[in-house]
Length: 105
Image (cartoon, rainbow, N blue to C red):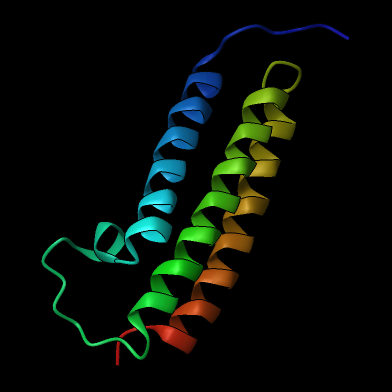
């Protein structure tokens, strides 16, 4: 198996991992969804703390998929992109479900 080395996809995966992880941790620790929606968010939520907690956990899980993409991109860019697309679809499904349950009224 040939190791490809560092590519643009590798750096993108690393940066996205750090961003998603930091946004997710912020939401879980601060219990505020403001970093994802808007800092000046004045919407009324069904349950703001649950929204932030579940949304933060979803973002942390999504950041782990970026970490997997980072590792896989050393071996195959195509498989790494497929993992990213699958993770984006899963993120969308879970985010929609969470938004319907706890989101803005």
